[in-house]
Amino acid sequence: MSKKLLLEKAHVEGIRYFDVYRREGGYRSVEKALKEMSPEAIVEEVKKSGLRGRGGAGFPAGMKWSFIAKPEGVPRHLVCNADESEPGTFKDRYLMEFIPHLLIEGLIVSSFALGSNDTYIYIRGEYAWIVDILEQAITEAKNNGFLGKNILGSGFDCNIHVQRGAGAYICGEETALIESLEGKRGNPRIKPPFPAVKGVWDRPTVVNNVETLAAVVPIINMGGDEYAKIGVGRSTGTKLISACGNINKPGVYEIDMTISVEEFIYSDEYCGGIPNGKKLKACIPGGSSVPILPANLLLKTAKGETRYMNYESLADGGFASGSMMGSGGFIVLDEDQCVVRHTLSLARFYRHESCGQCSPCREGTGWMEKILKNIEYGNGKMSDIDLLWDIQRKIEGNTICPLGDAAAWPVAAAIRHFRDEFEWHVLNPEESQKRNYGLAHYADPIHVPVA
Amino acid sequence: MLKFSEEQMTEFKRLVARYPEGKQKSALLPVLHLAQDSFGGWLSAETMDYVAELLQITPIEVYEVATFYSMYNLKPVGKYMFEVCQTGPCMLRGSDDIIAYIGEKLGIKPGETTADGMFTLKTVECLGACGYAPMMQLGKHYREHLTKEKVDAIIDECRKTAASLN
Ligand SMILES: Cc1cc2nc3c(=O)[nH]c(=O)nc-3n(C[C@H](O)[C@H](O)[C@H](O)COP(=O)(O)O)c2cc1C
Ligand code: SF4
Ligand code: FES
Image (cartoon, rainbow over all chains, first blue to last red; front, side):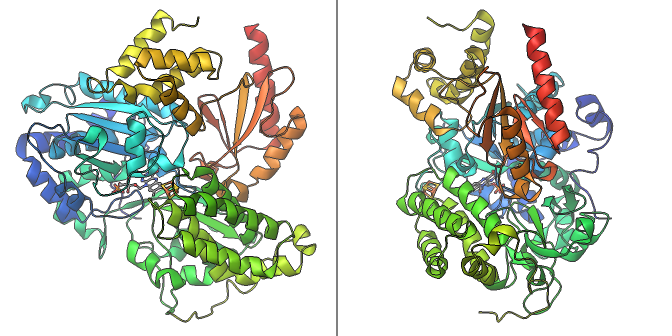
C-alpha cells in the first residue's frame, strides 16, 4: 500500500463537512502555522519538502513562493488553479468533491505564508456543483473562526472567493486565468512581467494548482524534511493520478512515486489491468499534452530499465523515448485503439482551445487537424505525414504560451513512435476504414536508439 | 426591458463584492452565468447590454467575453441540453456511439435542437470526467458511465419533468 497523505480520509463518512473533518484532525496545520510559525518559516518548510507544482509543469512550489514581490502597500493574492481541463485529468475535481476542507485548509496556510487577504479559487465553469461544495466548506470554516477577520487571534485576515470560469481550456494557463479573473477573454499575457510581480489587477500574484495547495497541509503537519523522505529523488511526496481509457478500474489514485508503471497498470490496487484480456498498446502518462509512448517504451526505458511512476523516470529518454508526469492524467490505449484517430481527436481539442492570438498556434492547430482528418478518413498522402511533422515543429517554441507546444507534442510523439500506423492508413485507405491497425510490434521489447 | 429580480440582484451584489473597489468588471463571467440562467438559457444582445449597464462597462467588453467562452449560448437552446464529451479518453470508451445514438433517437445532429424545443445535442471537449466515460453534462450536473439504456432513461426523465412543470 502506498502512503496516503491527501486522500487517506477521503472515504470517511461525512468528511465533506467541517465537524467530521475537524474531528479527524483537520485544520491542525492552520493552528500550527498561524500560532507558531512566521510566513517565512512556512515558505522554508515548503522549500524543504521539495514539493513540485502539481498542475503540469512541476516547478518547485517553495521557490515560486519566494519570488513573490512585496512592494509597500500593495495587496498580494494567492489564486488557486482549479481549471482542470487537460484531457485525462480529473484529480482536482475528486479532491474538491470529496474532501473540500483539505483544499480550504491548504489555502488558509498558503495565504498566510504569502500575505494574501483575498484568495481566489478559479474553477472551470462546468464544475458547477463543486462550487456549491466549496462555498459550503468556506462558510463552515468561517463560522468556526478559520476564515474571516483575525483568524485564531493571529491578526491575519483572510477571505476565499470561488470564481467560475465558462468553458475554455486556455484559462488553465496562469496568465490567461488571471485575465479571465479580471473579466476578460482568456488571452495569455506575454511574460515577463511574471505574475509574481504583476498578476491580477497588476498586484503580485501566485497561481498554484489545487493539489499543490492541498499538499501544504501534510507538509506543515509533518515538516518539510519528513515529507521529502517520501518518494524518490526530486519526486517527493505523493501524487494524485487520474487513470482512464482502457483499464479495469478507472479512477483517482494517490501514489508515493516509488511504484513501477507496470504495477500501476496491472495491480488490483490501481488500474487492475486491461479489460477483456486485451493487450496494452500505448499510454499517455501525464495528460493529453505529453508524448504518447508505445507499450514497450512505457514499461521499460530505452535502456531496458524498469520505468517508474515519478517525474524523472517518466521523462527518462527525453522526447526521443520518454514522456512526462505532466498533470497525472494517465490515458491507456488497448490493442483495438487507433493511434491516428486518437491523435486526431486531440488535435481537434487543441484547435478548439487555441485562443487565436499567435498565428503558428491558431493556423497550425487547424491545419494539423485537417491533415489528420484526411489520413484518418482514407484521403491522406504519404507526404502529409512529413507535412504534419513539419507543422508541429514550426509551432513548438514559437508562441506566447505553452499551448502551442502542448498541441505540437502529441502529434510529434504519435508520428515518432507510430509512423507505420500512419503509413498503413495512407497505403490502405479502404481497409483502414474497416479495421484498426492493431498492436503491430508496439508491445515487443525493441530497443530505440537514444539520441 | 429585462431586469434581475430582487433575489437575482442580491446574488449580483454578492458577486461584485468579491473584488476590489473599481474592479467590478472581474465579476463579468459569474454575472453572465447568472444572466444566462435568469433569462432563458442564452445571452441575447439585450441581456448582454443589460449586464454591461449593471457592471458599468461597455457592451463590447461583454460581447468579447460572451463569444470567447464555450458555456455561453449565443442563440436559444432546448430546455435540456445534452453536452456530450467527444475528446480522446471518452472516445476510447465509446463516446462516438453514444453521440450517434442520441442523435438518432432525437432525430438531430450535434449543434441542433429538436423541433419541440425540448432537447439540444452538443458535442463538447473534455469535461474532467474521463474516468467515468462516456459522459455528458446536463444542466448543473454530470451523467456518467453512459449506456444506451441510460440515455433512454435520461430522455424519459427529461420529458416527465417537463410535463410535470407544465
Ligand atoms: C494550456 C495550459 C493549460 C493549463 N491548465 C492547467 C490547469 O487546468 N490546472 C493547473 O493547475 N495548471 C494548468 N496549467 C499550468 C499553469 O499555467 C500553472 O503552471 C500552474 O497552475 C501552476 O501551479 P503549480 O505550480 O502548483 O503546478 C496549464 C498550462 C497551460 C499552458
Ligand atoms: S500559443 Fe495558442 S493558446 Fe497560447 S497564446 Fe498563442 S494562440 Fe493563444
Ligand atoms: S475526455 Fe471526456 S471527460 Fe475527459
